Length: 272
Length: 167
Image (tube, rainbow over all chains, first blue to last red; front, top):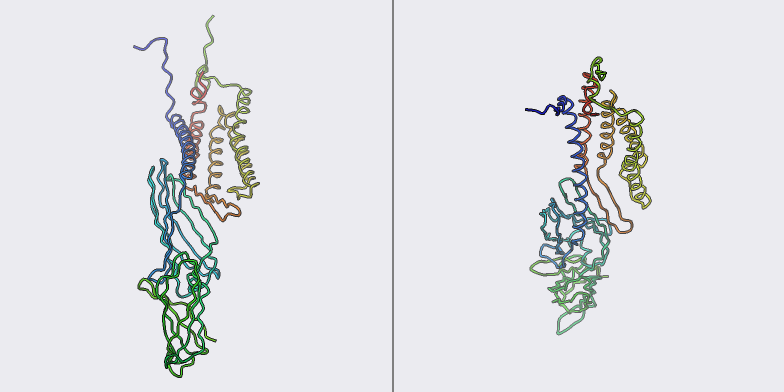
C-alpha cells in the first residue's frame, strides 16, 4: 500500500519522453565522440613516439635489367586501435621528368598492440629511357606517400618529396679506340674503357664490347672482367684483333655488362 | 481560512505542478551560458585558426565563417533557453539543430586537413569525413527532438511545463 504522504510523480506524455530521450542520446553521443577523438589524438602521438623506421637498404643490378633497391619499413602500433590499409607509394622521376618507377608496397594492417615490417623492393629500370642511370650521376626526385586508415574514422596520408643523388655504376663511361697497329703478325686496335663506379655496390661481372663501324660487320670485339669496388675508378686497355680492311672511324663502341646471367646494354660510345 | 484552490483555465497543467523561473532569472541564466558558449563556439576555434594562419598553414574553414556561425549558434542556444517555457522553444531547437547541420556540412565538404611543413617537403593530410558523419547524428537527433516538442506544444500547449519546470 502506497504511503498517503508520497505522491507518485506523474508520468510524462509519450511525445515528451521521446523528445527527452533523443536529447539525452545526442548528448551521450557527443560526449562519446569528444572522448573518442581525444583518445585517438593521444594514440596517434604514441605511434609517432614508437618511431617508425626504415631498415638498411641494399642495391644491386638485377637480371631483369633493373637496379633493385631493397629495404623495409617498420611500424609499431602500441595503441588500442588497429591501423588498416597501410601502404607506401613510391614515384621516382629523373631530372628530365621521366617517371622511372611508380610502385606500391602494401597494403598491410597493423593490429592494436602489434607491429609490422613492410618489405620494400624498388626496381629501377636501366634500359630504354633510363640508360642514363648507368652512366650519369644525377639527381632523382623521390615522392613517397604513406597512407593508412586509423581508428575507423580517420585517414592519414604523409607525403615526402625529396631530391636524392644517384651514383651511376659506370659514371662517365668512355670507350677510346686507338690507332690500329701490327702485333705478332696481326692487326690489332687498342680499346680503352674507363669509368667510375659511383654506385653503392661493386661492379662485378664482365664488360663485353664490340667495335662497330659506320656500316658493315663489327670490326672487333673483346671483353673485360670487372671487379670494381664501389666508389673506385676503372681504366683498362685491351688490344683486340681487328678485321682486315675495317675502319671504325665514325662508328661506335657498343658495350654490355654481363652480370648474374643478365646482359645489360650500356649506351654506345661514338668513335671520332 | 482555507488555501485558494488552483483553478484550471483552458488547456495546460493545473497551477502548482510547475514553477517557471521569471523572465529576469531566465535572462540571467542565458547570460551565464554565454560565457562557455562564446568560448567553445567562437573563442577557441578562432584562436586555433588564427594561430594556424599566422604560421602559414592553410585553414579548413575561413575564420569569418567560424565567427558568423558561432555567433548565430550562441544566440540561438541562449534564446532557446530563455524561451523554453514558450511555444518558440521547439522552432528554436529546430533552428539550432539546422544551423549545426549546415555548419558540419560545410566542414564535411572539405573534410581533409592538409598540413605542409615549409621547407621540408613533408605534407600531412588527415581525412575526417567519417568523424563528421558520425557527429551529424547529434544535431539530427536534436532536430528530431525539436520537431517532437513543436508537435507537442501545438497539440497540448504547456503540457511539458510540469516536467521541464518541476516545482
